[in-house]
Amino acid sequence: MTTKTAAPAASAPIESRDQLIASFARGEKPAERWRIGTEHEKFVYRLTDHGAPSYDEPGGIRDLLADLTRHGWRPVEEGGNVIALTGADGSVSLEPAGQFELSGAPLENLHQTCAETGRHLAQVKEAGERLGLGFLGLGMWPDKRRDQLSVMPKGRYDIMRRHMPRVGSLGLDMMLRTCTIQVNLDYASEADMVQKFRVGLALQPLATALFANSPFTEGKPNGMLSYRSHIWSDTDPARTGMLPFVFEDGFGYERYADYMLDVPMYFVYRDGRYIDAAGLSFRDFLRGELSVLPGEKPTLDDWNDHLSTAFPEVRLKTFLEMRGADGGPWNRICALPALWVGLLYDQGALDAAWDLVKGWTLDERQALRDAVPRLALGAPLPGGGTLADIAGQVLDIAHAGLAARARHNGAGDDETGFLDPLREIVRTGKVPAQQLLDRYDGAWGGDITQVYAEESF
Image (tube, rainbow, N blue to C red):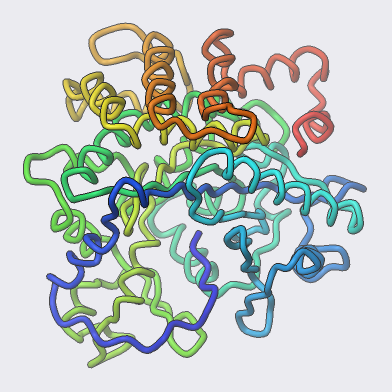
């Protein structure tokens, strides 16, 4: 989730809805300026007992952040606590229960993305060796109850923790017990954004399936392959989901702005603190009628904060975020941006991907999304068959898109090799969660602690 890494400069109040709509157009970039921003989270645990460290304990999350400053990371404070780091590789931030996230810098190609990931993981592993900490790449804590996890000292998380139980039964699990990989991608125009948004939403269930990696809850199989994805189905319906309006005629910046105006607020950030506005209306704020800040109108910073509090399967800011994947190991952190860059950053690939999904109805897209957490590649497709039947074809499209980009490293390799982990999943027909369950039922003998030995970075 978004972390403020600097105090925002004073900005003028927003006077009209048109200014909100125009904020999305500011993200438009010509293709030569498109970049790749990859975000990935990991669970932190004590090597001695596999427990989740608190922020304050010796060798805990605060000490982990402090240790990373030896690599040039600069601390960011909130309320006297270091809650994030900034540096050349983007920012390091904390999810609500201490899940450790790198929000990578905007990079030109996947070779840079994977190198950035490697640097980050090497740094945290080095710090972990000093502090007695390990790092786990899964989509959900495999063995932790909520009451075994402590909340990080960030004001927005206190507000969200109070609000989540009012609107869904699994929101606290989303906050405390899940990890994801995401990629942020650019668009050239409103029409380009629309096509990418539609392809991203329609094929997000395939990404969820290929990266499904959360089959355990509190030490036992939970009946799902991506329980993390299932959690989003009962978190907060006002700010999650497949956004059917994206496929309607006339969709564009204006329609997404109206959607966000209808998403209830969480907070307003003023003078270094978060003011609880949970459930209030940004439309009222735009009129100067927000009850917690009477007479005050929002700034662009307030709008950008509000945009970060919606959690659909694909999210629009001044870029598009692909949000469907579970957390996982190093090679899948590189594979997720490879999938989406291949599909969305070459027009031929984008058109081919759209041709594959454009005939799906609203109900068919929703049914596919609903089936994926339990069935992954076995989820039934519109018109018959399963996701497994098109997975190879989609990877072929992504491969062609990456090949057309022709971004090579020093050895002359293009970006297509980053798809190899996904090719192997399609070849075997077993997503990561199914491989974990096989080991749990087999070599592990039902001992969930073996996951720490085999799935840590």
